[in-house]
Amino acid sequence: MNRAQFVGADILSMRDFDKNQILTLLEVCKEFERVQGPILQGKILGSFFFEPSTRTRLSFECAMNRLGGRTIGFAEAQSTSSSKGESLWDTIKVAESYCDIMVLRHPQEGAARLAAEASAIPVINGGDGANQHPTQTLLDLYTILRRAGRIDRLKVAMVGDLKYGRTVHSLIRSLALFQCSFWLVSPPPLSMPEDFLEDLADQGAECEEVTDLGDVDSDLDILYVTRIQRERFPDPLEYERVRNAYELTANSVERFESRLTIMHPLPRNTELDRSLDQHPGAAYFDQVKNGVLVRKAILALLLGAVSE
Ligand code: NCD
Image 1 (cartoon, helix red, strand yellow):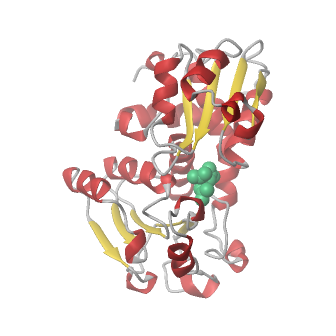
Image 2 (cartoon, protein in one colour; image 1 turned 90 degrees about the vertical axis):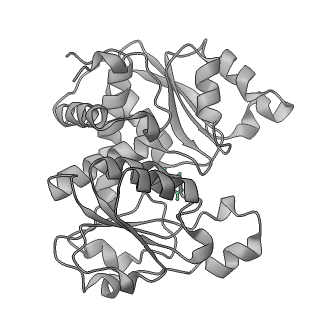
């Protein structure tokens, strides 16, 4: 598979990736376990975050610094001219003069695609509203591969806010490419949107929707837990009704087989108790660690610093 296709490309949505492209990218990530040194010296990453972030922003900036590049950017929209009414299009047209590649997080769905149309440099989507978070998916897939030894035909339960959670929206389609089967566990108001379910059906993925984790079979490979996305609820009362829908503890996962891997994109609230941190399958801090590695590989690939 050709790595050159990634040079100068945008990373906007996992819908744009086929299985071979994912595997090519994961192979480069594996090589980056060993790659060190200033291969991106002289390059500048623009890190433009219109929404709060800890991991995505810092891991991109860390990855760029570790590879010898530099970063510029902002972590809140109030400090930019968007607070004076500047359009996203204009902000991006201006920002592209200052950097070689950019990562953008924005509350509006489709913002990253708009930025990619406006700019001539590669745009990476660091999360656009409830829509997509492709680099989170790539680090999730890498973590799954490291933990489970494969991605194919895994039994995966996704738990929590499946309506507004962009991490699960990005991840589910990619896992379906690998013939995984799914338990979708959510309160009814937070179930997986219809278009994602139709997409899964088109791919022939087995999928069962339940409200209780107790209904999930015990021979599970991956338990992917998500935060209820308070900031996306139009009605705060609706959030209050579901905020504590799942509060998993070490006891809640006892009945699952020992191969279970427990994942969460973080930040967590009450859905994942700290008693789970001692579980041998707890992989959420591995995900954080892999985030730097995967983002190093992505930056180097898009900037043409990875050989065939
Ligand atoms: C996620 C996000 O921003 O979508 N966090 C992340 O990037 N690791 C998940 C969340 O905010 O719940």
